[in-house]
Amino acid sequence: MRPEDARMVEWITSDTPVPYAEAVAFMEARAEAIARGEAGEAIWLLEHPPLYTAGTSADPADLRDPDRFPVFETRRGGQYTYHGPGQRVAYVMLDLNTRGRDVRAFVQRLEAWVIAALAEFNLRGEVRPGRVGVWVARPDKPPLPDGTPREDKIAAIGVRIRRWVTFHGISVNVEPDLNHFEGIVPCGIEGHGVTSLVDLGLPVTMADLDVALKRGFNEVFGPD
Image (cartoon, rainbow, N blue to C red; front, side, top):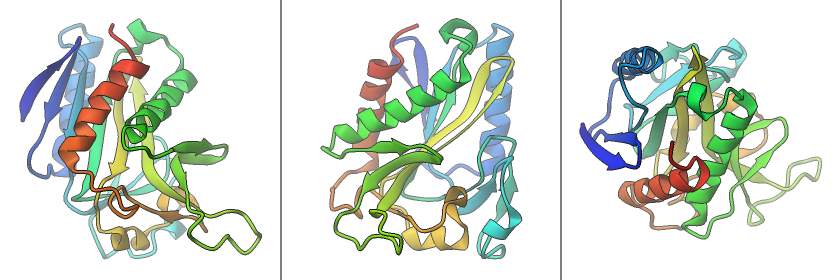
């Protein structure tokens, strides 16, 4: 990992896939140190090996192929998600004691952060009531049977907060194997699909997205 300076937040980037249990252990230790005033805020950009995670609201029926990849139960909010190569995961360890103890506002800022990053590539990301994550319209695909316009998910959000310090965070699909999402019902949402920046025809690299995420973070969250 190499630390990178971006305002008052430490940015950490991992160049090789990080095992999930190792990432969780790091986040928990860093969040606890932040709460004690012994460490600063951090954002960790990484990828994972292929795996599924089950949030606190996960329905076992949504795990369609339990033997496909390792499944990790996690205490973040949300349902089943997939992580794997080609997907940028951003673990966000921020102190809401200094940024405002408002969970809803924090989640809305995470959504706005993703949307700002996607806008760097002229892609319109949107949020929908009752559907967690960030979505893109797919007018090129047929509507759902009830006539609802088709939308695909491009980013997932799942957070945990302890002592008003956040961890877990967001994942944005750059160029993952979209077939890997078929082993779950992503976030418990049927009907709509999953897409990525490259799937949408945008030649975006992980490094390109990292630049956009850093710029978007400063726009949405600002300095301490």
